[in-house]
Length: 346
Image 1 (cartoon, rainbow, N blue to C red):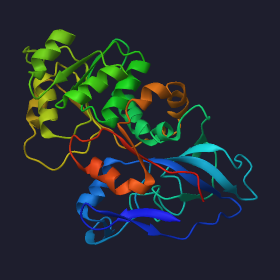
Image 2 (tube, one colour; image 1 turned 180 degrees about the vertical axis):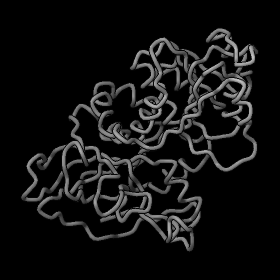
Image 3 (tube, rainbow, N blue to C red; image 1 turned 90 degrees about the vertical axis):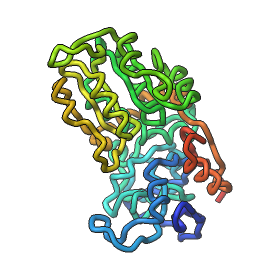
Image 4 (tube, rainbow, N blue to C red; image 1 turned 135 degrees about the horizontal axis):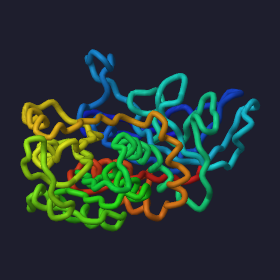
């Protein structure tokens, strides 16, 4: 079978690997769609994966992909809750022999995946034929987005701003509106992404490249005060899905007393953050990592609202053009969410 792996800095290659054979407790998944994540592109920027993940060292090629959706083509004799033909999404962190992608022995940008000790609700969740495979492949990143929203504890009465209209920011916007949050603003620097944010349900948008974020938030969410009595925006929750210092500082400059800032994007080390400014608002900084419980909590709503979530996908690229898919994903502003699609041929 074919798999995609890193081939040096900013390059991938398709390699032939043995097709796995399931044991009694396993299932074999034919991958039909797999999203490209920022983690995948980060490995490409690095040129591979450190042989010692914690201490660094020489880079090694790794198989890529951890956002799969597909159909079961083989099941082991002891598996009772899955059958051939079931359509499933996968928890890439549930395998006993290692994660899928991100340095694991298997990558989801492969024609087949071995699901070891497979169990519905733990390692996979089923979805119906009404949902396209490409949309179902959003399950994993939408779990990341839902965890950020859960960490925010946003209430229906809150006003929220999401910085970054990439897949996680758009997903967070959808989850916020589905839980009844009264007003959600999305800020970004790319006009096309702001248009997409409105399409998925944002109440308003801010082009942070051309507009004063604090002034616009005051217009949209009213005015409040920080701990020193200085005028600030009435925004309750800030969600950083962009991962640049300007976002943190914009939140610090706008935050009222006891506002919250949820950081779901990865921040690179920097000395440009005005963390001291957080004191003026007693701003609560909340980190959001992964999806401790959300990986399959998202699936029923992803199924119910699949047409809305489908708007997040900007490009579906066939497996034969996977190099083009990664070129799109690596080019800033060229794509929102790229999903690689695989046919059903053996």
